[in-house]
Length: 161
Image (cartoon, rainbow, N blue to C red; front, side, top):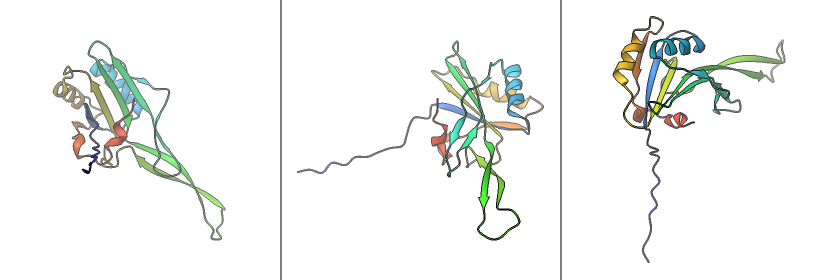
């Protein structure tokens, strides 16, 4: 009797473009700037992206736009969020419980990136170089560049809809 070997691959076919954006501005203002300069219509989604690293889940606000003419979907989300974590010490201290603010990253591989723009498309209608050029011309954005998805360790976080 022959032996059968089952090979499981984790290649989900990451058929989207990921753009990293550096800029110390609020997410709603960045969405406004992208709407203005890239002619998008990004709107705040009713649900946040949730990642559970520990007991306390981290939520990231997301803005999205479905362009039906170009068959493209844009998702803008922050790479950083802050969560409140209750610390209860068994040692005798002045206060019984303290709250600490902890930083969580959506993609831990890119801790210096402020925002991520995920562009999913059907076909090849997305003008990547033109979009990057227009993003880098916005004065509030320090820099923007594409991210090689194959090099990321936590790329599974990018699979959402």
